[in-house]
Image (cartoon, rainbow, N blue to C red; front, side, top):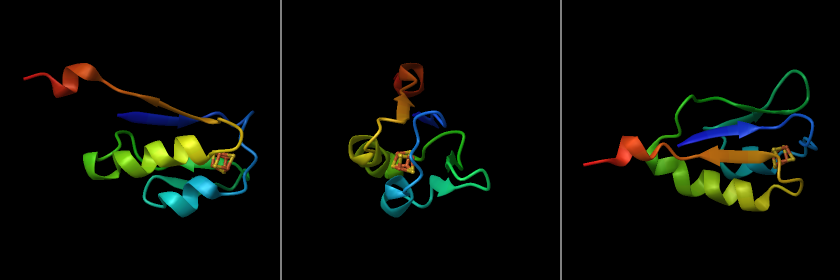
Length: 70
Ligand code: SF4
């Protein structure tokens, strides 16, 4: 799973960082940054929670289904 933050939508209050600091941080520009290319499986649930909790819907996730093929 990949995750991105739209800086045009981010209000930079940091809820995502509180929920999953391994994946999100507030960067020097003042907006949330994503720290990983690929979200580790054990953090996917937290990232999904950040998506729901983000008040401006700035976080998007993309699931690479081929990565889960048998
Ligand atoms: S929760 Fe959303 S608005 Fe808040 S810092 Fe994270 S991406 Fe930005």
